Length: 355
Image (cartoon, rainbow, N blue to C red; front, side):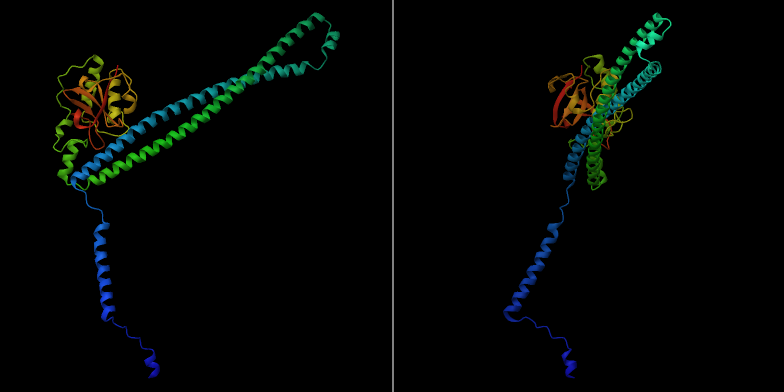
């Protein structure tokens, strides 16, 4: 029995008096802290207005990255073309060098075969000294040609080495440009993906209103009919035939989807649209918004005429083509189409008139 009693679990003492009251107070305080900490750790749900504002920001950032992507692509294309040209020239010069080496080798072989005797001995043994002297003159001239050939080969080797060095530099530049393209592409896709996830939190009606305004800062209630190809044209006259042709192209592009990096004919991004419109008018524009703004001459907002390029945001990350009456045609952002819209729906940054 004693052994049995020794194996019994000791009873837990209950706190009483002051110790009991202290333990109860600590337990209640811990429970209250845990309850309060729960909601504080969860992120507050965004309102529809906040979602739309955040989506606008993400799309603006994606468009800025798109223009950086476009600029990097131009430089990558230039680097690729330069590399191809350098390699082609090096190959042509190498072919010429090989031909020169073959010719030089033939001369050297002939001299070796006929050069076994001392020239004085050859003259003494010759039955016709005049023939020998004539042959010696030919050999001397051949020797001069050989020396010139060697010098030419040396120069050509130096040129080819220079071409290959430049090609290596150009290859490194192209590799860096491709890495830059990948970074900008990743940024674009990440921003667009975040925007899409936020849009999924809106109701169908809220999202419809957002899509109608193009996500460009305009208040809800925009008219989706603005994206209709049947949009009536403005009454303002273009200043010249080229501007008129650019505006006509822009009207013809209404309704075509925005695709980042696209320059037509089936889809466009913002600078791709303006570049294509002016290309149709016979004017070559650079690829990006931040280079297009330096094309032609700057014009004040009060001087806008159809065909002018209108730019937005402090980073010059968006562009449209002015068509008169305070309206422009532009490619707003992913998920929308080329449309007619008011110039004042975005923060105006400047305008340029291509010449």
